[in-house]
Image (tube, rainbow, N blue to C red; front, side, top):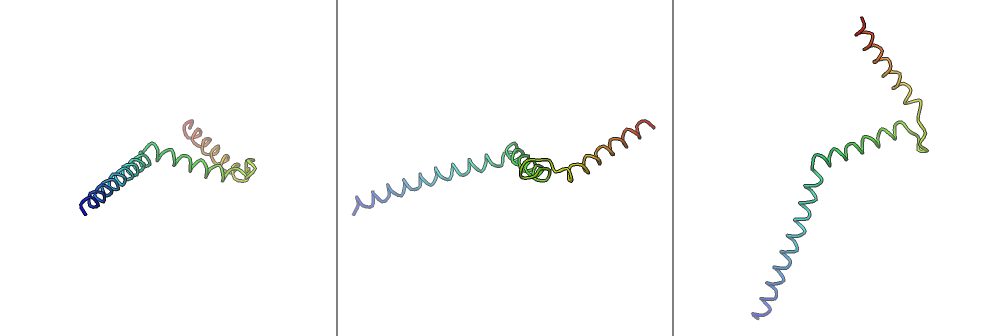
Length: 87
């Protein structure tokens, strides 16, 4: 019965080492994902995707009914800022 106990103990140790390796890989992956630079990259990619989907058609053409009012607002605010500095 002793050799079987040794074999199962060896198998248990092997299983523990495999579990540790998996856990280490998981912790490393989580650390990589929450790195501020990586979070910023993902956030920028999501913002860019949202902007593109809001301002472009599925064919890739500009949606002027959305872009034109925003452009006019920006030009108006710039003109107001210039006017206030001049006067």
